[in-house]
Amino acid sequence: MKCIRTTALSLTASALLLAATGCGAISKDSHESGTSETSAADGASRAGAEPYDIKPLLHPGKKYFGMAAQGVPASMKPVDDFAEAAGKKPNLIAYYAAWGDGFDAGHAMDVWDKGALPFISWEPFKESLADIAAGKSDDYIRRYAQSVRELNIPVGITFAHEMNGHWYPWGAKTATAEQFVAAWKHIHDIFEQEKATTVIWTWSPNIIYPMPDVKLKPYWPGDEYVDWVGVIGYYVDNGPRTFQTLFGPTMTQVRTFTKKPFIIPETASAHGERKPADINDLFKGVAARDDVLGFVWFNLKKESDWRIDSGPISKRTFRANTEGDDFGFDPGKLG
Image (cartoon, rainbow, N blue to C red; front, top):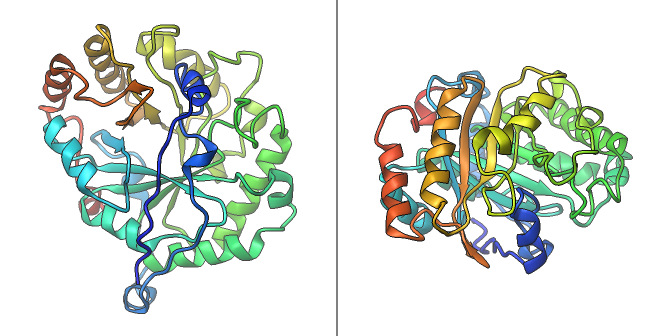
């Protein structure tokens, strides 16, 4: 049977302050512990099939148009509401999973059936990077990988995101870059051993603006361990307000050690007069770069109203940018 618990997304005041410059948008208390189950029929129906070929999804001809929202993926209604407001269905749906939770194949399949790629931020709140690298979570990781393999659909996974920041327990103040790389490689190796090859591995630092002295290269696991580079950043009044100043310095630094394509796995603009301009800037910035595959809009109202329909002009502006064919496609038709 499918797990029916709801993944709660919440922003504390301190987390929002960090999110204002693209940092730490989800608080530690936003997750419940537990495991999920998949029906035997669902698993058996895909276990004997050839592994899904994710290569066409790694650099498609059109852009990903993604979203995250309260209650997703336990409920798909926020996805429908977002699609109605945006004038287009999202084709990448992001959500958050606590370390220790089982892989929820039912929820991932619900997202895939919506015509979207499931994209999971896997957050190790309860286990240190050093312990993960040392093998203390191997049984859990192996079960997770087995469940992903049995489901046999594409799944994006970003592990320990914003590791160059200081607001998470796996961040730069409490864990070293070497520990992060060792944990990442260890997890990836177990997935390879279990032949869970349908994962799009996404390495996701925060924009360097809040902590320019933390260099990204030491956190890089290597091209053979990463498919996409995620760059997380938000448009706010007290930070950079153009695509180039917000994302450019980080992307420039990343380009000194890898040519892997970028995706923006978290972004939004705070409610205010500048929001329509920010929306236009985001779409134009992503469209202008062939190496930027798309973005995920953080569509929540928490301390600030990040939603695309926080005002009528913002909504109209967002809809105007989705009218063309550049953004959005059905991932299931590329495999």
